[in-house]
Image (cartoon, rainbow, N blue to C red):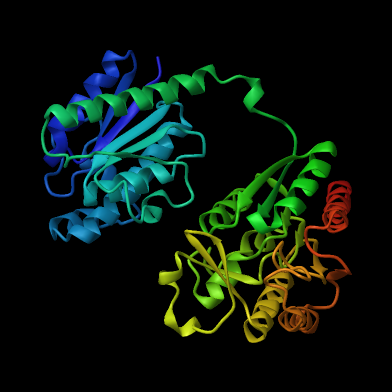
Length: 410
């Protein structure tokens, strides 16, 4: 019988957590209860007490931390301990799913703990914070945030329905994993690729070629979150090759757009030595929201309204030069095979000649900086096409297949 970990602060949410656990049992699954309370310790009833959780943290003096009643320090301590405990239980096969509930502190602890569980492992956080900026809670995991609707403060006509639905959701996920067949798995090596709306034609062609060559291709949308997720998967060691042709998130990181993936974007493949093909796809644009959200410092610049919610800013020559140096330096850091491909006639669908973002001066500044700062020994392939021309996708894909074959035969 599958078992689900029910994790939460039993000192303040015990009644609600017990209701959730009973609903899971009513649906035919077992429960392991985990108390992550930060104030009342070693309470009876839970299968794992809060002391047992805290003791699994890396803090030797965990009792002193809890005794100080510093809420922030205690939450961090319990989150770390709970993450280690859940990982132990999952690795040993004692649990097949995990669910937690909480407000601000409980959500921090529960989400920290469940982010440590592997991709595909069922995990749900019932939370009052399932809106707004949820990135700190989800990170790069597949944790599901389940809106609590009302505060988790007793059982009522709303919370009962919410908790029953959450129990049904986690039970359904766990049972689905148990029924999962071979159709969802593959032994094919994985290639990851980055894509934006303005590089779709390129990546679709590359994906077709790679799949015909026996690879499973996972495409990530270069929206900040997509880039971070791709980096995390590369860092997990599951990826055989990287086709990172849409490095646009670095434009947002440099200029201040809303889709940055952070300063470590492009680092995972370099660190792990994964065979990589790079291109400056969509480095000609920076993303903002509706026109009214664009900072006033960009007044007078060139814009393109991608849709009512997305306003694109064209990078200028100075920004493009800095982006070229960044891309070259990221390539220089690679421990494994890496090649850089330049589409000399346009970095995006709207950057080709005759399109709204075509800017020969800015593109030339980007290309010059790449040539100047790329270290000797890294192949730089320049093609007289735009990025969405089939010949560019074919050249990049062929280059990746070449380095993959060399790597596998070495």
